[in-house]
Amino acid sequence: MAFELKNVVPWGRNLEEYSRIFKLTELDFKSRILSFGDGPASFNYEMTKLNRKVISLDPIYQFTKDELKQRISDTKDTILEQTRANLDNFVWSNIKSIQDLEQIRMNAMNNFIDDFELGKTQERYIYHELPNPTKYSDLSFDLGLSSHFLILYSQLGLDFHIKSISEMLRICKEIRIFPLLNLNAVKSEVLEGIIDYFQSDFIISIDPVDYEFQKGGNQMLKIKQK
Image 1 (cartoon, one colour):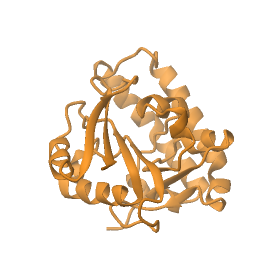
Image 2 (image 1 turned 180 degrees about the vertical axis):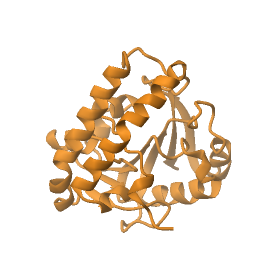
Image 3 (image 1 turned 30 degrees about the vertical axis):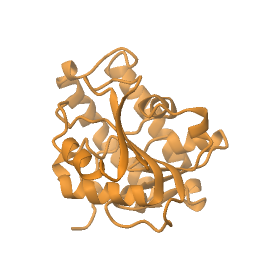
Image 4 (image 1 turned 90 degrees about the vertical axis):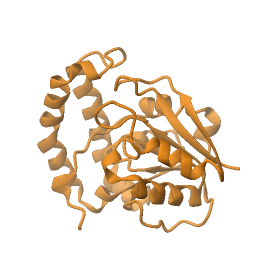
């Protein structure tokens, strides 16, 4: 089935959030980073401004700037309404309110939109859809990240996750995935199966992080080459 923009619910996070979500260190910032399913995050834009190297992969990068901008406009209010209807599923500490959430997300997504065309010409935004193979050679990146995609969307199934993570581990020395919950804010159904599949050949840990918006969503999965 073709990937269609009408099925996408774009929602972008910023560098400060990525730093806390993935416990990024100064050494991490200097490493070769490949970020999967970045969508309209401003992570790449902000890292590039700091002269850091990030390549972002996502199927939405096949669309134009105007198409993405329109889709963000079409879906923003629906996402905010769903959040407002489920306030108790979230921790309102760093993000103080629905209005604060809207401002943070729109700032991130507007920065992405402004950077998108330049980033495509510089091959920082690459059209790619997991679990398809990437064009990169084995272990060509130090760190692979997946924010609010893998594990969160448990309905994609365990086989999808195993194939996707296998490709990530083919090209990355270490990967980090956040959060470990599903969309209903409970432990993801695919988490144990992922750990069982990879634990014999890789070093796996579940690490606490200094970030929690979805209640209980304060852990990341780290998988490293032995």
